[in-house]
Image 1 (tube, rainbow, N blue to C red):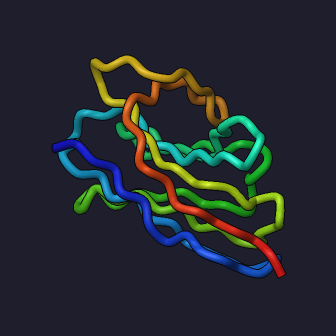
Image 2 (spheres, rainbow, N blue to C red; image 1 turned 60 degrees about the vertical axis):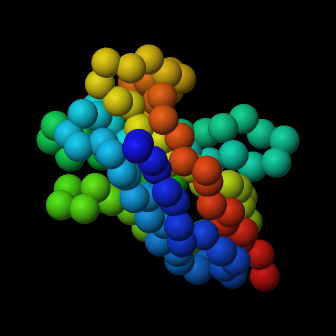
Length: 130
């Protein structure tokens, strides 16, 4: 069964760090990109980072560039999002999503990479507050 399971969210103080994980089950090699998204209350979902499967090239939204880092471990199909210098404005539910080959989904351009994300995890809450 295809699944994306996020973990690692929580409460952190401004200026702090947090690492999120996204475990992908049932995907194998059949995906084009995996990305991290976030949605704050009352705001639209925002694509913040993604990695392209074929060459591990990473892409970032301007809002997180220099502070967040996405990485992937292929041997266990896990994608990480390292977040540093967190700000209250980073408070949101964070989701990972995959663009599976031969499937259509929601169009997003994340850091310049256009993809159709058709499979989404349930999300993990990140709260940045003193």
